[in-house]
Amino acid sequence: MTGFPTLLYKEVLRFWKVGFQTVAAPVLSALLYLVVFGHALAAHVQAFPGVSYAQFLVPGLAMMAMLQNAFANSSSSIIQSKITGNIVFILLAPIAPAEIFAAYLLAAVARGIAVGLGVFVATLWIVPVPVEHPLWAFAFAAVGSALLAALGIIAGIWSEKFDQLAAFQNFLVMPLTFLAGVFYSVRSLPPFWQSVSRLNPFFYAVDGFRYGFFGQSDVAPWASIAFASGAFAALSWLALHLLRRGYKLRH
Amino acid sequence: MAHAVVVRDVRKRFGAVQALAGVSLEVPRGEFFGLLGPNGAGKTTLISALGGLAIADSGRLEVMGHDVQGDYRAARRALGIVPQEVVFDPFFTVRETLEIQSGYFGLRRNGAWIDELLERLALASKADANMRSLSGGMKRRVMVAQALVHRPPVIVLDEPTAGVDVELRQTLWSFIRGLNEAGHTVVLTTHYLEEAQQLCSRIAMMKEGRIVALDTTARLLAAFSERVLRVKLERGALPAPLAERATRDAAGWWRFPIADMAHVEQALASLREAGAVLASLEVAEPELEQVFVRIMHREEPAARP
Image (cartoon, rainbow over all chains, first blue to last red; front, side):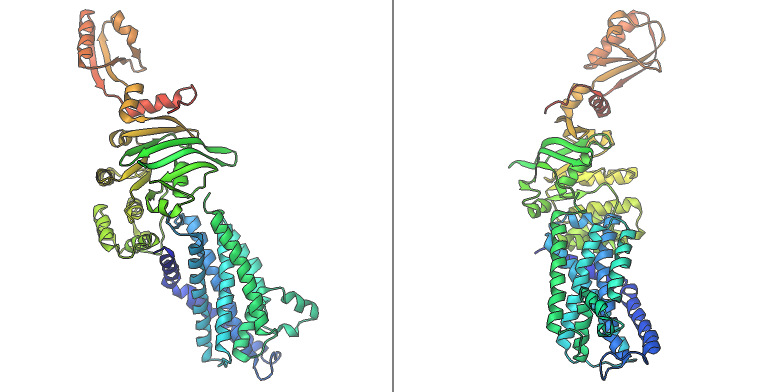
């Protein structure tokens, strides 16, 4: 018996107890984006044939919410524990670095998926979307959330103050999610910006997730899952390496 | 391995500060061991290294025979540390906190022991209260309970009574003393030297990252402190044989070291013969505080234990 299931349970309970902030609030913001942008841009943008702009937006917004919330969950939990000092209770326990990693990761994925499902269910009333390939949709939901959960673990470990974490969020996570093709198809961009977008791992999560709904995407889903999983593997390696070394945790 | 804790030539540097400059000590199983020293002496760093909160630059640390790095799972299972700072997780109630802590140690059904801990630490009425709503002293008691959820054979308390009221201190010490009598090894740091003198059978004193004294409490008291007779004279002067051994403080008290009560009688008799009249008199027992001050102010290089 190990500490992993308990740490996972604790991490899930932590966001679930304040679910109004951690799940309901992001669902509401996604709905606002949908209503406002869907209305304002409906006449101007046609991404895929046979898919209205509002429909096109739904998977993108759901993925954006998943990415941001997965990141927020692992990063804020770690930095709060570090700043308040209660991380000692985890560090003093016989829990392996890989278990700590897996627990923070899976809890963040759980929050990401809870928020994503919330967005999807809430938008059903406004803009119904088809789900052509549910398995692809689920695979990208999992990999996208995991990618940002791992990044959040790194950000939480590295940051010493809340404003450092906020910088991570505002200057890395926000721009990369907004530029991941949530609001537009990257095909509509000039060639240069199309190539830049393809360097953004978040783009593959958004694009592949959309494939799960419409069966259409800018990049083939296998390529997207490979890129997103590769980025996830690299970040996981880094996060595990930091945890094993005790970087900024065990002094 | 008869030792609960083994520390061998442990060094740790934080930037320009050599927090531990080669510390070695052994704590036999079942001992009540005191780790004393001024702020910044390295006590907390040593405890952190023992619990894996800090990683020593060199040297070896063992808890119940388990290396704290190589065999960290077994070492941490054998160790319960109550950290110095009051910390808590505001998301949970007292009982949740203790259940989660049990789970970290792989203990699923620990309710009976949790109930007992809550009872013994006078927290039963707060079991379902959120951690945020607790007073500082209560939070500290929860931390003691957290350190004990897995019934560790070695308990380390890092200044557990700092800022804690008298009643709680009594409760806490009777509880910890009971655990020690039941076979748990206890390592204590405190600035209350009276507590250390009463509780600890052996004491290490640290200064600037080194151990400067390590012996049984009784031998430290015998070597560095003495029973003294303190007298204040109303009239007359000290007879010469007494004056040789006496020191006089600012308030006008004379102090003579004495071995036993026979000495007191002799001193009083010679005072009477000399025609001196006493204004006041007291006998002071050896005090750890005196030992501490003398050891900390010794200029010679650190004594090798």
